[in-house]
Image (spheres, rainbow, N blue to C red):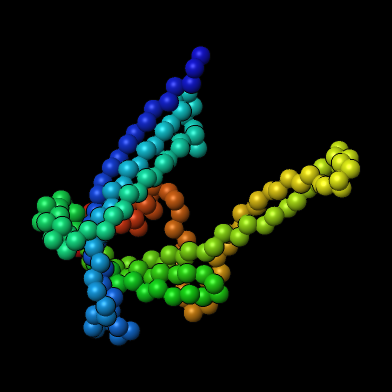
Length: 183
């Protein structure tokens, strides 16, 4: 019998306003940028198996730059059940890794989340095919790419724990979930 599957879909949108502050966080430096993001999450489950590991979740984000006027209009039309998320973001490099510290001001004051972005290292493992007896002395090679991704945390940061890709952590620490939290 053919495999049965079910699909659940969740969509939401959000706007953002970004300003750059000086190192003291007191004065604006440069201009302001505005953005609109549309997020669609699709979860597909094989109904023949009750195993939660048989879920496939696809997240599609579409982003675009918007004007100050479009931002203001969208802000007025927002879902009032959600709180405006305000945060300070500190960005820095450490050992060729990019880090962002999100310090939430509202609605979860005191919450700090560290995002690490490291370059995926691809190592080439070449394997010679010994069955190739070519006169031109060419060797047929198969290239195997292995991805390695390790984050080296700076010693001056104290990290409580790594946020996992679980529903509990997504609900608690994702921007969408934070916007639903009470002050």
